[in-house]
Length: 297
Image (cartoon, rainbow, N blue to C red; front, side, top):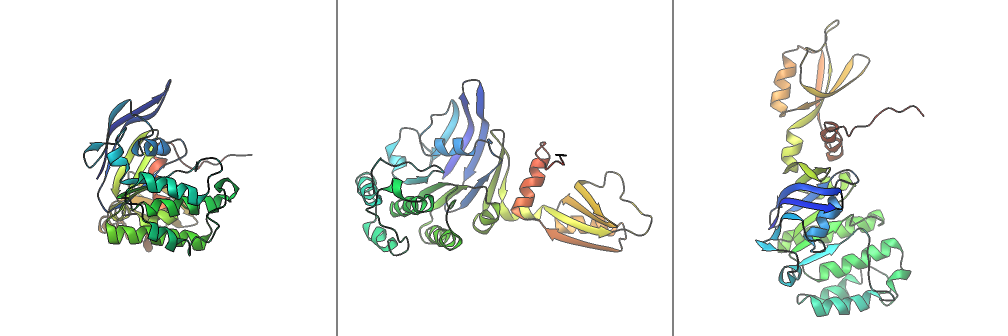
């Protein structure tokens, strides 16, 4: 469905994207994560056809996105910073989108008014940030897009509305096979909805895996060794800390592999704990000098 291959984008002397490649399958929810400045929003502007790449390809179903109205009619994008015409209300923008997107569903627009309870005739610039997000989402899903591209989609929404928005998105994925690419710093939330994850750093993709595969190949190990024993050199932990006799290690590998390796040490106690997506993000980027440092203030 979505294919980005060897994508390069430069702004003067600064290279924002450096040979980025990834793909998103039809009907999947793909989480694009990374630290600030990694290039996530730049990728989204290429996928939505705003930027032209300096090199590489950005395609949807094999068709180039840039300056391709046929592809863009099948796509809806909610950027982090929402922009609409000055003085325009949500209903004004509905009429505008209705004239551009042939699939725009007026029945759905009216039904969603019962969920997003704000005055759609009020100028959008007078709405709060959260209400503007609700308006953007209401318009986007009424386009009935095949591809939904989201940049911090629920930022500014209260917990109940966040859950409501994700419920609508996931229903569209299940019922219509909508393909979703979402960039967010709320990794706990992405963990609940994504089936694939790509981690970016400095304009490149560090890794791209299904969420289950990612979580099945790294784990937190807590163990107590017999009195006087220490870990062998080159045990293979990517992170190590201790509290008294309890060692906490971050290990790569399957549960079976790690368990067998630990059993050979004859520990007094050990336990394997799966990592959250947020923890995986921190430890994966720790290998490229993106770790939490102790700083004396």
